[in-house]
Length: 473
Image (cartoon, rainbow, N blue to C red; front, top):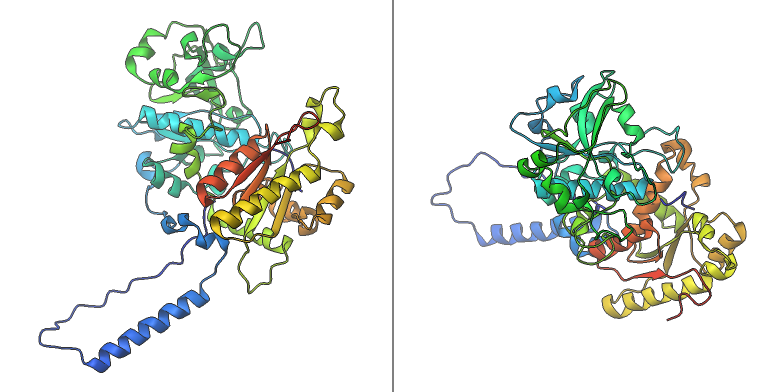
């Protein structure tokens, strides 16, 4: 079972190219025997390589052709002065502009927030600096987790054509120096529920030892017209504040002194920063869902899994499906069903009529199986369920359908790897399905759907819920 709501394909084997000292071949003609022997050797080597190469159903996907190692593409040290420093500013290059923000919305939403940050970095031609993930959705005592230990940062940098830095590469994680920094407060301009909205902080600011003086962004950063209640800001409106003209015209807006040093600072130009970037779109709110989504197309789909954690997830999936050691990982359909807090949205509708039944979910699985069969010629019988459901009878029903799941308690996953890993492994298993079935309204399902579609050209379905017959079609 997954914990709460919240792929990097297997790396190609390294094949060294040995370059012997060149020697003259003038006047030497290979004999027929030599040619035949060479060709036979090449054929045998190729056959042996194919026989011994680790494989899985993912090896047949189109995206495996661009999965070399990217470890040397962008050297992060080339975009700072050197090793992490006690004060972050001492490590910034004078010829480089940076951008950062922070997350505080649960892991999946934080992934989307950092995706928005990186997209904003692209359109402002700045280098993004990414902070760690906070464990607000698991246990607040769980240590923050490094972005690059979940996602393949070198590969991401290669794909988007710009380096991606992490805060621990800029400022020493053990530093006790409190840095002053002026940032823009987006939340103060767009937040719709409070009469007196304030900047949105994040616990990560304390861990980074940052003392922020916030300046309210102008009202025109809001994505939707005045009078429409929505919390989204516009990418390009925010981008304007990263350039001299718009920045200088708006420095006189409401400023809040930093909480500890009590200094009032204008928004920093060298390190452009915003309080909260989850609610940002180019044309419409909730923009990670539609096919045109720029944040997904230019950033999100390139945020592939760190190879180590993906191998760990694959091992968990194989054991859940009882795959013999000497056989490849078979194609499977992944499911994500979110129940937990969604029960609270049922209102007067009885929960058993509000949430989709297993029979409704099974119908969606059958649709995905049929599409895989007709469109790709794949017969997929393995199904892996991920869910935050805690009712044992519900899980017995899952088993009765012939489906399986990862038993994290039996695997001792948290005990061995930490509290974060069930969440990560669920997301990776979801993303590596040959097809996927998810839950309407869940951002975890949203990202899984987009990954399966983009990375594996897989069919997906989203189960509707909320009232009797919601998923009728």
